[in-house]
Length: 150
Image 1: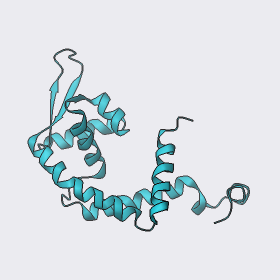
Image 2: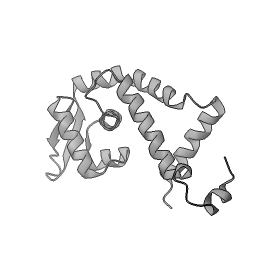
Image 3: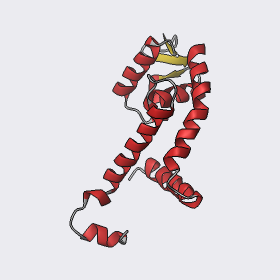
Image 4: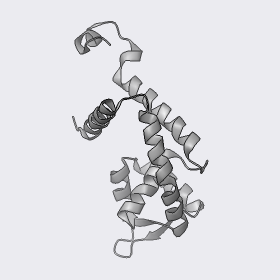
């Protein structure tokens, strides 16, 4: 690959742009997730939300949104679908009637526990084209990009 300055100064090449490459990598990861995860109705976003709820315990939607980086409108829809499947439950906060608290059900916990080992395999398959050093670098770089506020 050319050096960074030549990428920026040359004609705009979509296939060399960070947004395009991130989107393509995410599409590949999502395809691997859907192929490997045994529950065909569980999306990667639903899995992330359930994993966050498992970690947080009973939590308000706003806290789950912060933990998962899923916007409120999308999160409400995801939680509603998970509730319909009996994987989470929603109750009104007794201290603040405006808040809705979400927790994982025993069925949801069972699904997450069964899915986590497969999700680890999905990560391995996603990173498979990279050697070990590149895997560490990729995760480090993506971690920095994910939390940067500039």
